[in-house]
Image (cartoon, rainbow, N blue to C red; front, side, top):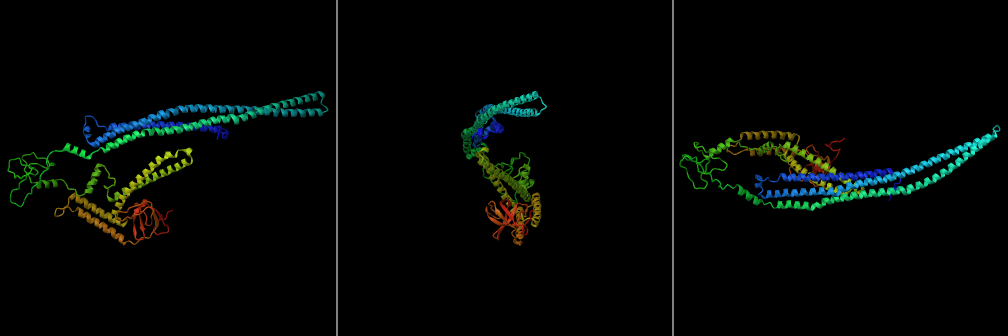
Length: 591
């Protein structure tokens, strides 16, 4: 295969193609330069990060690094600094081994290309000049032939006319002979030039152009080989630092394995141990005896007025609880512990609603739990459904990206000149891993959603019924929290109230399903993924299983299905592929 024989008439296209090849090489040089800049910037940011979290000298932070976990963190920062140095090495090697050499090679390539195409244009101009000479001699020969023919006709006309003198006839004859001679000379000149042009044309198409195009082909092939070698060098530069980076990571792992939780716990004990002993038992105060109540040695206040005290054996005499301050006022009258305790309980409102407390703390701190447990049930369900929808969109987006990369890889496999298929493997694996992560995340939120849906009654009329019960429950809960209601015997009654309300909801929920007649099937569905129906109202399915659809998704993300006419329940709509029967009663008609 030779460009000189196969592409003898494609001079302009070859000129464009070689220029495109140089542009590709310059683009690759720009890519490597930007990669080196990124490596330098990344190394700089890593060094700044390591420096930012290094302990400051002569500060409290240095005392914290006596713990093994902090020592491991310090080792991680040092290894990170070495890790940044390897990225600087990558940048330096790519600049010296790829960028500098390719910039110099591009200049040489441009000069060689310019010389080759200059020779080609010179050969073109020469053959065009020969062609113009040939055309000029041809036109001259044609003109002389016509002039000779007219002169001959004029002579014959004069010779046939009896009124013309012999002198005029002789003059016409000489003119005809002269024109005839000129035509013969033009013919000989045209023949000579034609032979010369044919020789020049043969040499042009069989010698000059093939040689020039062969040089251009060799130049282009050297450029292709050079860019391939540069790509190998690009990979080798990264490969050379992998062992050192591995050592840095091994150092981090070793530092993590050196963490000793028992040693850290002992250090905490040594740092904060007070040496005091816990307070003793509180003595019983008998109110049935008609005697003056006394305060034991372990009461909330100690006597400092010189009055006689009841002394009981024990090491905790005269000590207070560690969370109660001593009252230094000498005039304050001592009070029994029960009075102090009652005062403490009445001065601060008791909070029975743990969910309300948790929700209030979350709102004050501005932190939202991952499962949205600080929201009411219905709001939580909406939040979870929105989260599931967003995750499904992300999964679809990543899936489309994976399909596009797969198609591009197939194109590269069929046409290797368009790109290296192996260069897409890393990106394909990364996208696949992202899809798996998103699916696990979606499964987690769908499990929470299924839990919420399982606790909520059915929609429509039952939803309104539940809404009223939920409002009443909310009102009662708020009342309990505000009034701190207690039972006659002093125990709290909130848990019993909530339990009874949950029983009412469960009874209503069960009654509604007991009254329903079996619904007819409106289509079929195929399980796309395995679903474990652990909550009430759900049903477990296996990937690839075919079941009957008896109720479509009402917008809440759940589809009601049936198996073997006696087992039915809800599954997430995203877990199945539904095929509706348009003629079935209750099925929607899509236009």
